[in-house]
Image (cartoon, rainbow, N blue to C red; front, side, top):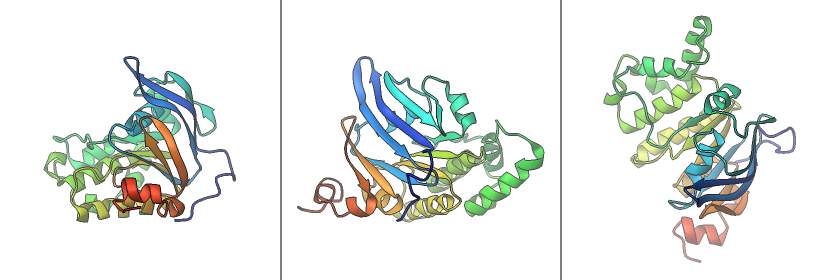
Length: 247
């Protein structure tokens, strides 16, 4: 998949020397990367590699011990999560975390809590339902009664209601059947076509490399390999470690 020219403008996200500690134990060790406007970048790696910790640090859910985070050309290091969300960075967490007792419509409208202008709320809802049409058939249904795939679509749709500029997706395929995974990633591709910048954490390495423009491989909190996905798919190290192919 060809992506935008990363040198054409200042990146939407720029991470430099990021360190994350949990009780003195280093989960992320000096990670640096950037995501250009309109680009899809994937972080891949095994369980415990530090991928989710990177995402949480980018939105301020865990503090950065060292390093910096720039969002849309502004230094966001140290500012709280709600201010990063207001700037346009939104995380769809692992496990979906929808409100099971609320309807699909209520879940979606909650995603617009920072931008509740009633004039534009309906327009935003129409745009989200156009991108994720399955939700339009479920608006009056309780979120907890949806299938796992539909709940993941709802979590993504709720994030889109806030009109983010940068969408961070944490393991969107987790726990889903292959058919549902294909539907989710089909929606992600359609969302990307709108020009939204996406940082994707995904254990399904093959699918991540098919969807993203560039990828970074994390091992025990460090980036050990980076490149365009078209090149990484043919890298014998990636084939052996993550695609189940022999060297």
